[in-house]
Length: 228
Image (cartoon, rainbow, N blue to C red; front, side, top):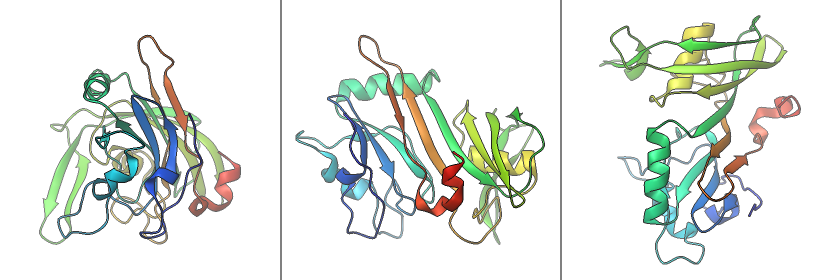
């Protein structure tokens, strides 16, 4: 079942209005940019604090099966039952869940496609805090990518992470292309919203159709929406 997705406008939007897919096992939400999945340490709004909005007739709220960065929008999978949670957890652990992202990289890319295979590790400094950096002793991290469109010195890229490291796409975009994602204050080019969007998720299931959901690019992508 597919429903109309919403957008985040403070506390006025109901998460139930952002549902892209729902059945007895799963919900896929079009997570608005700016709304964190987990409640921040300093407090404030979050998906976690609004889970009751996603009960949709069930006694218990659903469980988010993965995370998106606060400023990343798009497909976020939830399990509605303990059995579904175990099945989806196994799917993530065995890397059978397919996730796709669209991002605007702040440089012109000549190649049409490729694979970024750069191990990542967390690096912290007192001045800048922490971020993920290339490290030969870090955790293996692999991302497929393909170029979709180039305009005005920037490139719309589809990324498919094959591993699930923290900030993987953001760090890999910087490592591979030198300038990172537009709007990314840590790894890319500061200024304006971060143009990174979880555009599609595919979860295969035994005995029933796969969950295969796409989230349209939000308005913050401007004219890039015509290129996706």
